[in-house]
Amino acid sequence: MQMIEHPWGVTVHGAGTVRATPDMARIAFRVSRLEQTPSAAFAAASGVIDAVRQVLRDHRIPDTAVEGSRLSLASSWNYSGNQRELAGYECTASFAVECRELDDVQQLLVDLVAAGTDEIVGVDFGVSDTSGLRAQARREAVLDARRKAELYAEVAGIRLGAVLHIDDEDSEPGGTSRFRATAAASMGSGAENLAPGSVVVSAAVILGFAIGHD
Image 1 (cartoon, rainbow, N blue to C red):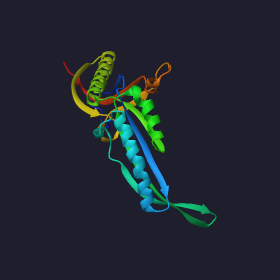
Image 2: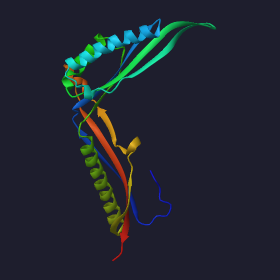
Image 3: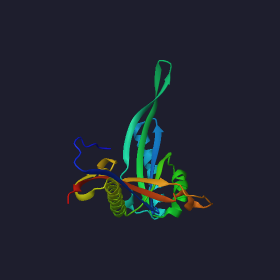
Image 4: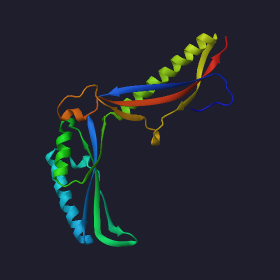
């Protein structure tokens, strides 16, 4: 919360929250293979990557929804006391994909693991229209701030003047509002229950008003 060293009017903080049903899931996963030589590690990982890509195509996930994999190769060591022994070379590929069919997320995860995926790093649910939800949350934040300012002015016996200061309070890097998934109120059976009940978009603002003079 920012503080104004020299108050000149009415300063208020406003917050806005919008809930929306998620319509997409972002899945991050990793493939890793350890072999005795770099070439063998690359070959083993490539075979799994081919199988993973086929799984994604079978689930109707377009290539444009798959982020380019990050491929790395590193030496792997076994340690015993003060001694170390080369265990081999580990080739790792990381992926992130967007799935628009939420009912299919559970089966997609099962099939990715069956294809050789070593780790499901995370599953994050979101919405496609992020800019629209952000705008709505920011409107709610401004309205909330104005309501507070009007209440303070009424109780203090003053008239609220024009807006003189607007300070965006988005807390996320890059100026984006906060998105978080909330769990469903009740859970039944079925793959669709992996999805949260709603995605929450939050925004905040500081408004500074002049004090009106009759």
